[in-house]
Length: 151
Image (cartoon, rainbow, N blue to C red; front, side, top):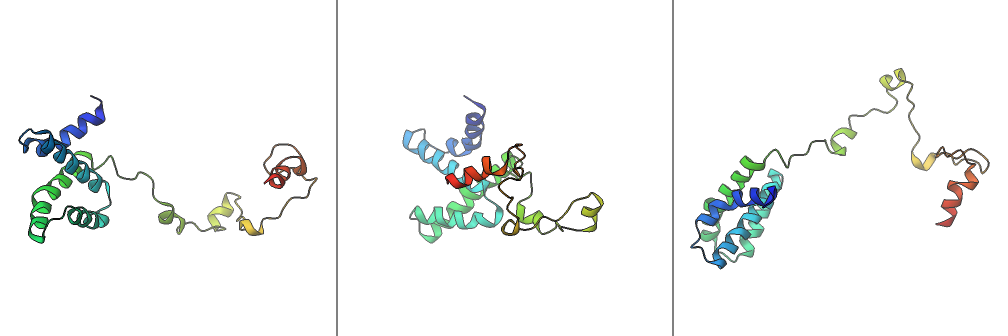
């Protein structure tokens, strides 16, 4: 087996050990393991909604749902965090996390000779005979203007 299959097999092993070995029970154990795997990949704040959706779709009554969640789902999700927690964490911050910290036109930008660019709506359109802004070396009318007209 490949590395991913080996990891998934190791992850699902506690559930597989609880089966009687029948194909039906093993398939159910793998399905539950995969569901827990997917829930484990979610951010903490979205996990409970996924757990509720899963247990609701299984048609369990309230007591069975709580038991299933406490004895099977939560231990498997904790197991996922222990085995694969670092693998699924984002390395780079999302745009919304860093975008608000950028000050266009700040003094530090001026030190490096950076200028604030006007919004795209206000970017002046080059004249037909001006050099093309894509730096192709061609005149605008023979380069990007032709492409824009073809659309």
